[in-house]
Length: 386
DNA sequence: TATACCGGGTTCTGCCATTTCG
DNA sequence: CGAAATGGCAGAACCCGGTATA
Image 1 (cartoon, helix red, strand yellow):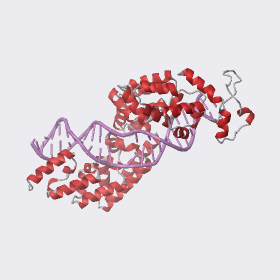
Image 2 (cartoon, rainbow, N blue to C red):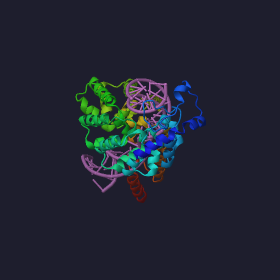
Image 3 (tube, helix red, strand yellow):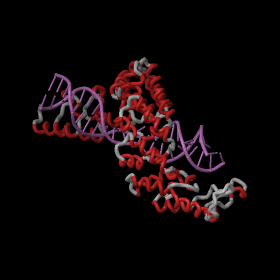
Image 4 (cartoon, rainbow, N blue to C red):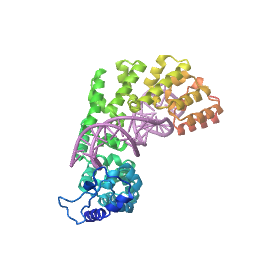
């Protein structure tokens, strides 16, 4: 493998002039320092001329083509990699093959994150083992790589990865939490330890400011409720917290309750999106004759409502209202908004068919699994008045 | 025993900008 | 200086079922 790679390097240099002509390129520096041959002698000597930096390594390209890599995509993503004289594409491919990745997956990985081929096997093996501390099988890792090659390959700092695992464990996250975290937000583990620490410290600070008594437990609970939090910027999270606090005029205990509960999820919405949804919801409620406190209560009870974009949300609300449900009922049982507009529409139709009386029976029926809903409808159809 | 309550599962990368490195 | 490393951003809900409880 290594030998092949070396041969390739030699081979490629001899084509550099031709390549230069084929690929655009006006040297930014005096030609004399750039347009030189390299290694055609095979020597690695101190005066070995440099491969023109604007020229791609032809035998690397050949290897990539052979591996089925989308070279065009790779070039667009990380052009520098294609110009490198020494890379490890074949060994890396072999390595991944050995871990159970298919050729197609490998090609896709390299196409999307070309820098992967600059890693050494020793380095990869070590990194793989570190991931295996969290995952049970190679197959799980392969599937993450296939999904997000960048998460695994972007950093070459294995020591940092190890420290991250230690750090996250020290927060009280157990192995199941770590597994969920690495599965869901693998980028977390490629963050610098410092960045992760910053977020955790930020969360702890917020918590203490609000008068909480166990900051570490708080950080842990926010992370396990919102697995994406560590790949957000503290700037974003802070802005969202402040926005919620001021828009809803939350007291410290209220804000604390929100963040400790399901409110953790909405922290990673983009600032503008959260603002937009908040404003839109406020307007809609006001149009429906609700009070300012209704908005606050609604969000405290059902923070995920802020995930729903204005058009979807208004659509859902209108749909429910048109179906004979009052806004008061919705405010009391906001979880019905969990379901898709289509689902709600269909259920309302069904319920209307069997003459369901929301005034008498409430609207909880809308918040149930399809199995349970169907069973209920069947029963009602059999014995209509009840 | 039917419903209400509640929490869990699913899921999130791929690009650009900036900083650091060699 | 170019490449590598790192940080940050936009995008946008839905569904299921265990179990307490009336």
